[in-house]
Image 1 (cartoon, rainbow, N blue to C red):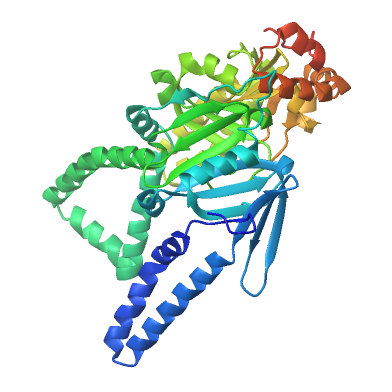
Image 2 (cartoon, rainbow, N blue to C red):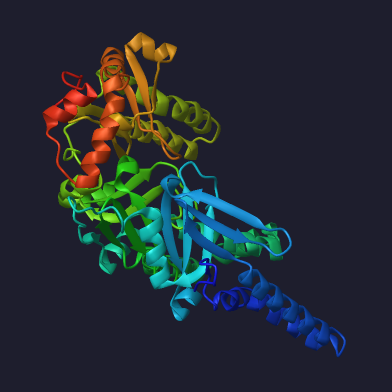
Length: 508
């Protein structure tokens, strides 16, 4: 709603939602007041009325408007704060609907500038859904970019992840570890209550002294816990990512997810700095990957991580068309140049060396049972081999692709134009083997794409020819224009602009 001076206020129900958020504390105070007698109860009621009045005054003194190309927000009772956020500096506009907002049909709007801190620059809690869309269109420019020569393109859905796929993401990903953390917390609490020694003694007494029913019961409980464990991981994934949809509206992507806590993030396509493709052995066997879009700047915990948007699960055969939408001009998953043979020795040494240092003393001191520790170097060798096989990189169509990891692999795809700086490092051991590691720094916070244990000569040529030229900086303008018009760019044009023709690994 707007006031007579043209400024807008939050929805009138905003103070009510604030009170609903602190209602449990107020109820607790009233319960204590009732238990404390006739004196404490009136004090608790007066305190509640004061809080309600304060929330109403805070709502009445909060206004926002768009003027002179900037969003102006004024708030505060005695100490007035005036925030001026230029529209062209805005990085992202995110929407959030907690359960209390869904019931009332309201939305929290989080607006942040590029290079912002850990908190959103402007938080409007709460406005109507129609007002949220108007704000996003005006502030982010999604509703004003069309001209007579460039008609507005209707929003279109790029991806929708069904509940089955979301649940599969939960039982094949890191959410399985959350259950372990919860079980650990329960045991930790039990240890604090009854004492760790007493808890261990109770378990020992239960399984010792020939109490076979106790051991059998433990086995039954362990087997029965597996479906509960999987159901908890799937349910957690559904609550967080249920209803996942990715749509494109002009130059912006909109990501919607969540059941009880619905979140809708928006980011400009031309601000995507890197795309990460993650896969573990189980997902690889099922032909699935997860994808993370890493953007520049931004804050506000609408997406959990302010600089990334994660697609929980995607069929591998749909990855190529998806990359073409979110990273225009990007190639389909390229064939990578494997790491040199010297990198295999380094991977083995890094894994097997520490395992031998631990396994040998254990095997000697705790023999004969300790001899099982000698399996550690064998397992470490397997992990080292997996790490070596995961390594690879290439340059194709103006993009650097680099893969790292082991059993779980991460492939980074970075447009050459997005490289802000590069760091080529080589330890004494790498120099002896003719290897080096190249870090490709991109804008914003988040992970740094890196080429690990590549050929030092080839990486040095890549750093100079593809990542340190003036043409690479110019290519940023090409990416922006291509993204706005959603036009494909020929590999020859992209390679010429980025200076990648003839780069090592190109077209491999």
